[in-house]
Image 1 (spheres, rainbow, N blue to C red):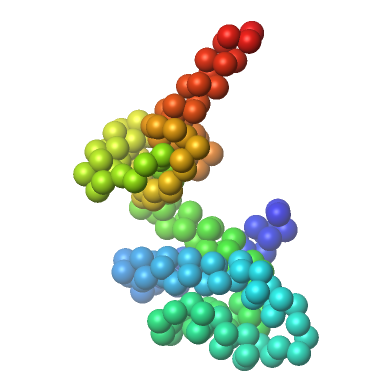
Image 2 (image 1 turned 180 degrees about the horizontal axis):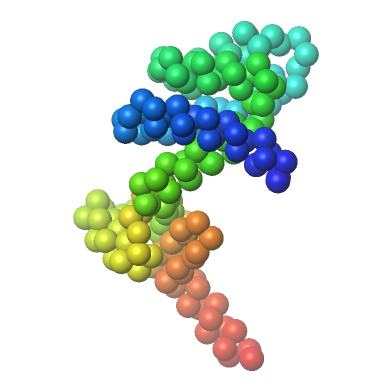
Length: 180
């Protein structure tokens, strides 16, 4: 994977610089379409098209822009054409991830995934978010995923840091203590 990361870095940095030249709103908009294009590029069906010599770059562009949804802004269209023309579609998910990391670093924030056994209300998520921001000493962009195997509590992943206060984790700790 180091090779894909190495390939993706200049594209992510160029996109970041282009957004910086256009102002604050550009990076927010670019985050949205870069994530969409990364998700499209990661799909197995699209990977088959990328490897097919009968599919032209214009056809690939048409498919990707149509699957990405709403009309892409001019910057996104140019970026996608550049990536396709350079044969780097397989790197798009990593480009999106590295671009997100650059934007987060500029804003002084991090992405955080909250795994919860149950659906969380907006009020509970806001309260948890403020507690987690104090714990991790930075602004967090929270997203929630449901994981019923946790039984109760939450598991939070911020970069390479994990805070696991789930019932499942506590039961595993108790099991380890009892069998030791």
